[in-house]
Length: 172
Image (cartoon, rainbow, N blue to C red):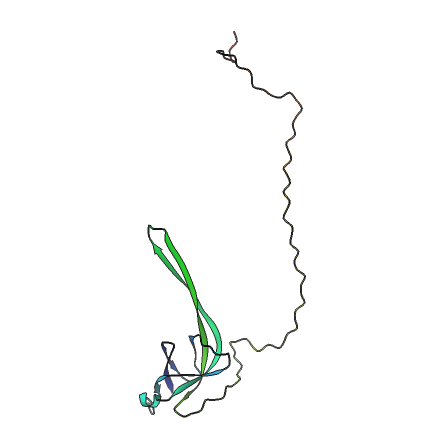
């Protein structure tokens, strides 16, 4: 048996035991929720299915966990105008597992405390790890002035004097 359910603007074909993602719901992990409206109930042989059987029907599902979708990048570009914009987002989803397809008047099943093989197992309270000492930061290196070059104690070099109108390279 299967049901077609509308949830968050999407339609899903669900059977008992199916897992699927819907837009984020405000429900705690492990809680039982109902999905309505059921648009169609179907069966392999077609008995008791159709729109009439879907009136008052609902789907009982358990919240398995909350997930993030894949990261999407949106890039805008206008040539020759130096206009470039990058935006992105990750959709938030709730993972549900279908427990039962309920017709009109059937009670909700009790929330079963099942162990989820995909989710992290319930961990025993762990002892707090020992606090590590804070890592010492090095002080920035002090800037020392560069040593001045050694100067030989000799007569300072001076440029030869130039006489007016004469050349220093020629002798007369």
